[in-house]
Length: 389
Image (tube, rainbow, N blue to C red; front, top):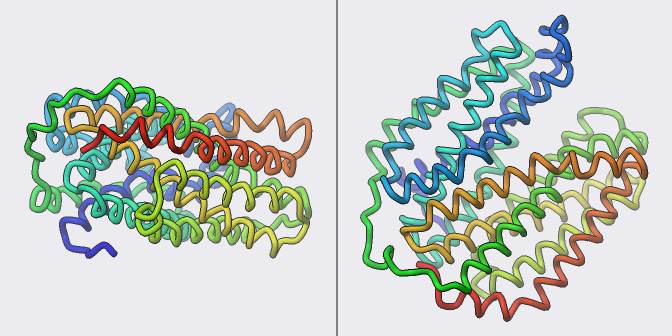
């Protein structure tokens, strides 16, 4: 189990900044839409306040990764934290929805900087089982932070839709901790080894898996409320409880990830995790019982937690120090592109066949992916055997 000290706590708090982007603001969206109701398209534009940063995280992350591999990690991190605070809090004082959206775009740039550097630093600071332990704990911490900030955002939004934006000042408050407890990682001789050609194919497979993974994961937050409404459960609190149980499953499995990974290899963890997700999604798509859906969402969350932790560790294990920032930047882009495209991929399916069919279709895809990892497991293990740091 990970022992928490101020050094590790600083890394965990930096990781938290990513989930804050959507979780803080999401409860305020109806109030924002109402406040700007005279703005043309206010309904759609207010929803973009939540989703727009995702696209700009995806655009920014690869460039950040390449930059920090050449010029170091921490200097750009300070720039990202200041930009995060300035653009995140812009909703406190801006009176134009269009200007708020510009602020959200720049917030996406800031998150692309901070997230890429944070994950790269974790790869630099930790090795082997210690790295796996920390990534599992970090994934659980992010899940808990998401639940917490949804609650805080809801309370503040009931007072004023502007108040949740104030929480983004947290990034500046972290700066003294970073100065005190984080150091620029020294470049080691192993950082200059060349990466075997086989590993570039493996990295492409991991990146494709990351995009597909997040397209499937984001079926839950984007489609589950509509599914519950479709089968007769139209209370917002019921959707919130189901999403919270899904997050709880993610937290629990993340805490046990490193133990599982010690007994098997990355492809087989994916096999288990995709199967758990498939079971949860299939049951959700086939039942009309709310309590069965709760159990199914918890089961799916177990798979999600394993998959997110496994994907992050897998990339770190296959990355030498000189390419770690670039690889994590690309991974970040893949993860957030998956989030962005998930509703675009499944919305036509929902319109034609209904939301329940989305969950059964996604479950079928997961069973197929799980089978592929099972069958190709040994080949993927051999690809990655000679790489990593």
